[in-house]
Length: 460
Image (cartoon, rainbow, N blue to C red):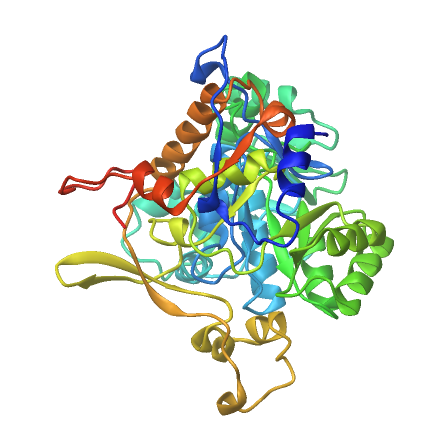
């Protein structure tokens, strides 16, 4: 990728640190409409995106629910590391199991358990599906506990084998997705367990997932070769247990997430992960070309750029992509949505959601992941921590799909204004101009009292 105009523009500011509000893109002739543009891109070398948006690895932004929402829209979420490695791996698995072809390792329960225990585990683990295979002590399939089996019970204090469905339609090892759909349609069943020659459970097909995959009814989803939703996970330096846990959960990319990516520890961690695993590695954060080249040389499949960029808006997304970014990571703008883990509160008559930087005092006190990100993992006394982030509130924004719809639309319109049909074309032909402080003020609404925020333009 080469953009002579951008190279010349940046060369004219050799000792100036420009930010997004300092530049503007020049409009150019277009022979297409915005909705005809192509905004597909990449998260890393082997992980494509249908929309160039990524949710940040922050504990008030991305757990499985946010990652699922992003993947369903075509983006990807990075599950945060401010939690135990096993818990993070569980969050990754929830994403991978949300929409599947063959579930190779389905959630199962054993004979002898009570229905009440199964329901308690389902609630605690936040499983969004029903229909659980029941196996015996030799892992042989003996039944399925369906929602219908439980629905009409007057008491849950009964054993699963007393109420489960035992007359099962099963498939053999090697059953294809198309074959599974045909069997489930003929027998009108929602689940098709796959068993080996000894009757042991070897996998599970779900009708809705298989139907969607086979009929390609949701091409906008960001799915892997197994038709599972894609997801990434953040790890730290010297974090072998965490890396192993999320890779075993079939994570699509590992993000070595630190405040200062141009360091010996990060470079060595990238080399170690690439040597031991086949997974894509994203490394950062960096703010210089020298740092980016060092991480690429170490084997990184993508570089996370930006140190302390602050809040994001549509114009920043466009400028970032035009400057060369293949995708943009979003934090605060997604923290205010229904799919974030943040707490929703009412403040001065308006609904807000709690949000904190991973370098904030609360985040670093909560778990070691945040402390390690800011090179303070060795500190055990909270009074000795030096915060590098803030805690606050962000306005409640509703559904993440509605928020991202505005950003997707904004990017498409920007491509139209710049006369570039694709993200790559914008990067190769986009033209920047320097904006003065007067020009910036002129570009925003002035001389009028804004009485209602637009969904894609909150008042400053």
